[in-house]
Length: 197
Image 1: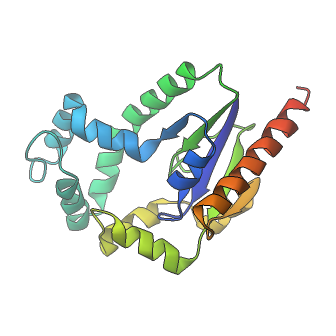
Image 2: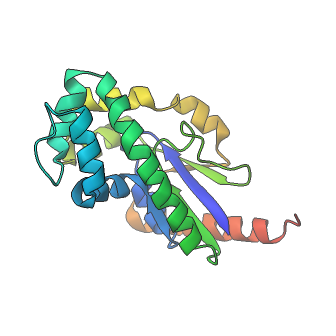
Image 3: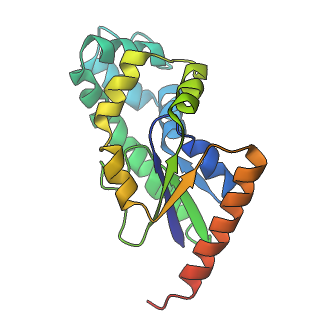
């Protein structure tokens, strides 16, 4: 099984690119949202450390945003509870898809949390600043200050770019991107199939 990890800045289009591979995708942001919506254990733990902000179940993202904006240290507290739960979901996903030729990992803090492996294929998504801003403004909980806090948590993007095996320019139409990813996927599969371990 080939593990393809999608890297890039917030709003660069990592999720869009991940879907185009037409392979099973583990989307960490989606998993976090599901935890907030469905996991009572997660809710109880967060309520215990942030009683002033977490009011009811399911957890409202607006309450978490308020907690982080009021005190940056709260982001670390939230991460300490949420990340282990996401990790166990990731383990389950990998186990479930172990017979697949390829899986896609869309995890914003993949490198920071040392979730990548030596043989992983790292793809960095490049996108124009104005396109990123346009995408971010469309998001439901768009907040400039909150984004700045999250960006601080990400490894310097230039460093991630250097670690990448491939760069994908996400400034084209849907059909052009679909074609680009199809070609890249075939290239990765061919290269890996010709390697003898």
